Image (cartoon, rainbow, N blue to C red; front, side):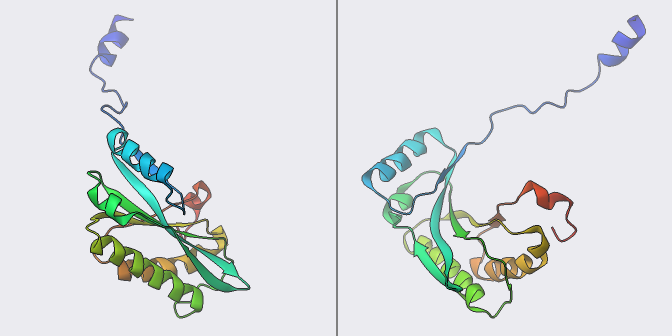
Length: 170
């Protein structure tokens, strides 16, 4: 017993220490006074914020961009890291680089990054939110490469699904 206690005294703990960063998601299209108030509230409580910039939905197989009515001036005054998210509604493909969906994604991404820059919002990241079917991960990579090509120095992040972790294409 004494030997096993002595042997375990020098072992390090695998527990994390320190505060966990709190990043809030503001997933609202319409920036009402209540939403703007929530941004002010988040500034005092959060370490950063991710706001929905736009959503692309497919209507009769044509992409429709629905932009959020972001108060860019308010975001520009925020003293916390700000990221912008582009949500893409479910889409089965094709994931070609030249199609109307890909063009809509890249033009919307570029527009959101430019609006942020024009309003003094230094983006911490650009986030692409798409629940891709596992069988389409190779095609999704085409979109990711296109988006990365227009975000410039802004880091690109993606939301992922746990089911992707064992997929070779992930």
